[in-house]
Image (tube, rainbow, N blue to C red; front, side, top):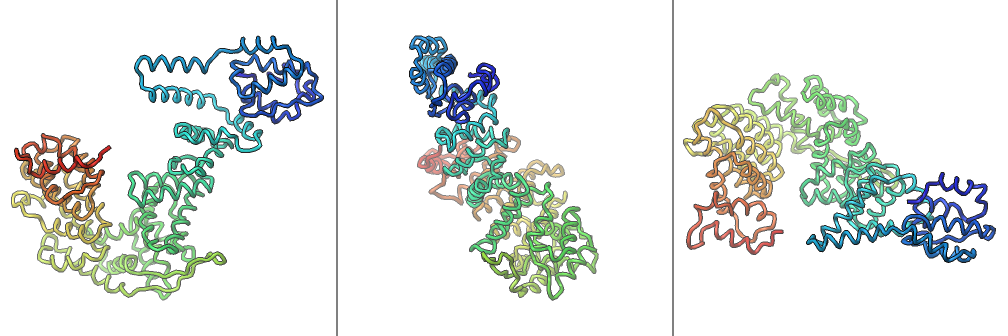
Amino acid sequence: MDEDDDDMEQEYGGDEERGDLMEDEDQYGEEADEEGAGGGNSTDVTFSEAAPPAQIRDFCLEKFKSIDFIMEPVMMDLVNQYFAADGEPAGAIESLANSYEGIAQYVNLFAQWLLILGEDEHTVQELIERQLETMIIKHFDPKKADKIFNNEGGVPPWVMELITHSHWRKMVYKLVEVHRDCLMLNFAIKSISDAGFQSEIPTTTTAVNQMEVFIRVFDSTMGRIVDGAPGALSDFTKLITNGECTYLAAQMIMSSLIHECPGGMNLVKIMQDVNESIKDHQTMQTQLSIAKGAAWPKVMQAVASMVAKKSLNPADIQILFQAYSSADPPPVGLLRFKGFAELLIESLFSTDPKIPTDHRPKYIFLLSYMAAVFEKWSVPSKKDHTQTRLDIFKEDLKFTQESLRKILEMSAKGNDVVSELPAVFNFLKFGVISLGMIHWIGKTVKEPSYFKFAGESRNTPAHLIIIDEIATLHPTLHRRILDLLVELFEAPWPQLDVLIRLELQKMFLDRMIHLVSCGCVLPVLGYVRSAYAKQDTDVSVFRHFVLELLDVIAPPYSVALVKHLLPLVSDNTVTGMLKHADGKDPVSVFLEDCKNVDVV
């Protein structure tokens, strides 16, 4: 490598002695010291007319002595300048020859040896690229990089060449995390985004604080969430929690889309999931402000206090009840926080309710209000960004309140709820009631004595029948139902006989198969596959699952389904005894159908 600026100044006596050696020292002199003899791809090596020929010759000869200078792209330009200053050919040839070590050629030679020894060409290329990447990361100097970037006077051509290769783009992502203030790296990130590779920019990189880059990555990551891509929500959370500005920008964007775009209300669930995943961050006040709560500070404080403490307070409930019972209530969005809604549901649908009798109607009112009331707001324009509440629709509030009151009375009967099943089914069409029933059923069936005779009778308990009905009515509650079934499936049930436990596990898997029939396919298959991989459950349970599942599915099968189900079905330990010699059994038919699916 070439000398640094200090070495250069010592050798030529500093700036005063160098005089007018170059027309533009910033364009070439410093650049040559930083990048190597040739100054990167710069070809402007024209010396000042006032520069003495002897100084030109000495400068060129010194550069020729740099290691492998003959490989530099500006070598011929300096050679021409050297000869123009009456330089001796022998001196140039001797300097270039003596400085040649052939490092690049050695790399090519070693690569050829590896190929001869039988290594794959792609593997050899990756090996060299990884070694180069390690060296670059180790020796990268952001100050020198920024000098090169500034001295180029425009976009260096090699930057655009660099970002066309996925391996070097990944190296840029690693470098920018270490050197966050490097102008060249941040420009490279922007260029990567401009080139259409925003979907691969890590959501953790600090470079997404550039608004243009952030918007593109935000759009790409949001699309992955809508498509249901695995890990999309986690990536989105990392993206918007890079800083306060990114979090606020994301919240404002989603809040605007909710009111301006068709189907924008679907974003409410995404916002809730995101806020739930970053609950360790202090974002509650920001969320309340975006929900237009600044004009109601007491309401904001009451909600924030209960969510932070994860406990309902009768005094705060009274404040909320009075505010929302008034003629001009606060925005309903101030109530619609996942943490607060779950606190209300847990209190009302508890198997051991502790709410004072005189406060119970207030809890029911607030839960009904957040579930049934709809508000119409003005759409912000370019001239006026403020939103005004145009109307409040409370037509369903009283009916929801009454329904909640009745279902709570029925659930208070405990196991006797089977006599009320037709009425319970009628109320399950309300999402908030179904959500509450999932919580109540979870608490009920986990009682040690609940399944004592269920396995022996082989009859499905009424509570699990209610779960099936909820799965049919509410696709948005599938994940909660699956989480409950997984918890029941993995419970040890030490008080039960082994055979009864096996029958219970099959019963829970039957509920999961019902979830599959309702559209919750990949989450169920993914869990069952992982449960089988643990090898801690009797294989007959999974054999039952496969047999029942194959009875409700039919081709054509998606690639994702085959990837999840094929390992289980093709395992002879599970399905060996289910196969027939004629190959017409469900297992053999499924395996034959899978041959037509291209599983990578």
